Amino acid sequence: MPHPIRNLKGRAARGGPKIVLERPELAKLMGAIAAEWGSIDNILAGIFNVVTLAKYIPVGAHSRSEMANGIFQNFISIRSRTDLIAQMIQLRLDEGIQKEFTDLTKSMTKKIKERNNLVHTEWQVCDDFPDDLIKTTSKGWVRFTENDLTEMLEQHCNMRNQMQDFFIKVSHADKKEVD
Image (cartoon, one colour):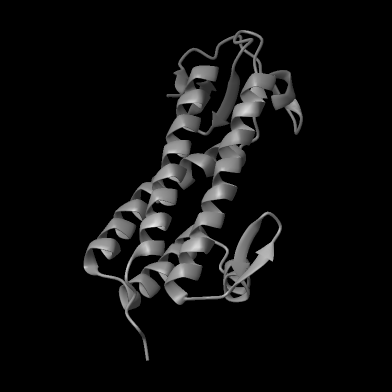
């Protein structure tokens, strides 16, 4: 995981919108982590479709219902989306599936914070760490290596895989009729 830089004396960092391009391998890994969340977002829309029995419409390379499109465009945060899906799951599916979704959303919340901390950072580079990216915070500098981002990407891929497995499970589960 990321490494705090304890001694800043005599060190200088430079940044800017394109600074990550000076570390192309790290830029690719950050892009892949962000893309995983696009996939997770589509899986959430699929879960929503299944639990609401919505009719799919094609949207880009994925299928969403008109209802999912409207809701997902208006519910900005992942938390709002997962809360809505949890309520629908509670109406339509058994308690075991409800608990599984609750557990998944707890894991997802931790990972989305990690993703947000990556994509909403003004990155820096420092010549003393020629292969790494630096995140400056009020508490100091934190160095991110290729191994750190590779590990994060693997964890985010695992999160997406768990969500996909859950989507498949929900797709085949018996659904209660709602009046």
